[in-house]
Image (cartoon, rainbow, N blue to C red; front, side, top):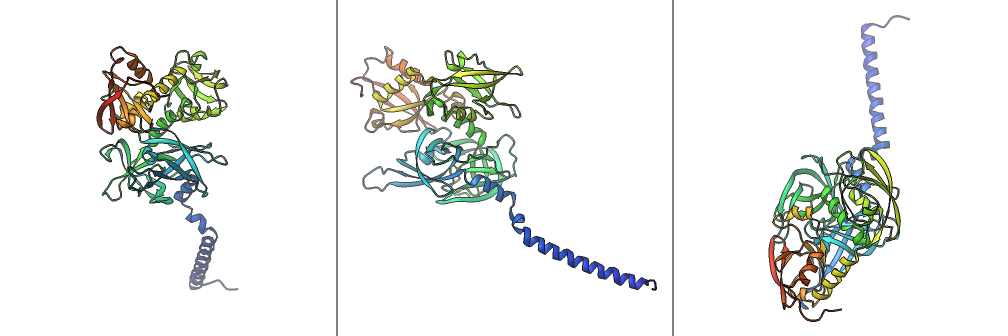
Length: 446
């Protein structure tokens, strides 16, 4: 055998390269055929798949104002925040709706009831009786959002359920005036398409975590939508799902979110004589577990207590001064004095009131120290005849502020009011302060 010449070696290497390239190309094609679906499963696809079953479509019907008008059909989106059927959406989606229907991702349609709402933050909690536990949305944080990062919106756009749009965060901390009666502060601005019907749906980051709740599209603008930061949403929903509202069970703890990376939530205050007060819980303590459930957000604390009733004893894990403690809280029935005051206000005026936490109130109305939200108005009642409506905030009666139900009780029993035919009231509606007169004499409706 003779040694190959330089020319032979060149031809050999050239042929080998061609064959190798052909094999590589064949491999790419073959690989593409076998794993093309994996290449197409981008982070966006995965994020949507993980969140989809936690998103619901909401359809409602608002009664007509006159007999000549037809009922108005509305739509929106909701997000499952608890497996037992609790769903968060926008207040304006369910405001004045006589019948709320929820369609799950699987196609089942169920009737829903309004649990509680907050017109200031435009948030509401509704509940369905699901046949099986629902999948809760994965909660992220809005603390570390970055302008320019990718986000995904999911919602019931124009009635087309589970519509997915993608964009970026265009800006943060926006103040937006949507109408004469509704304004928002500290919103996320995005160019992900948000259309009518998207309200109440999640804004997701690329990891599929909820970082905002879609709330509005700017009329006349192209590619500009807004979302409430998820940290604000979680804070408000924790109040709306307080056990005193959901199960008429009192614990007496006011909590706050912990610092980033800190375990549990922080005890802000403990009501004197409450179940929490008798268990020696102290401000500054960190709650880490309730009934064996880990606590990461304020909402987790309220959710962990949903299955307990007055008289039940619940184990609570606490960290105090860096040392873990194991305590027990025996829940009590909601304050009967507050319940009696609420019933009297309903009987006399025909409206139900709910305290708006001062920190959330200040976020929207700094000129007042607090107020009571109107959550229901009885037809043909004095409140109805004064055109008070659900979502209004009662901020004063006569010469006093109304920040708690006890304030109203004091005012109605005060000598300056007793014997009058009517008492002047002040309400906030959007950015306006309105006033009128409610009768305080005569028989009380039972």
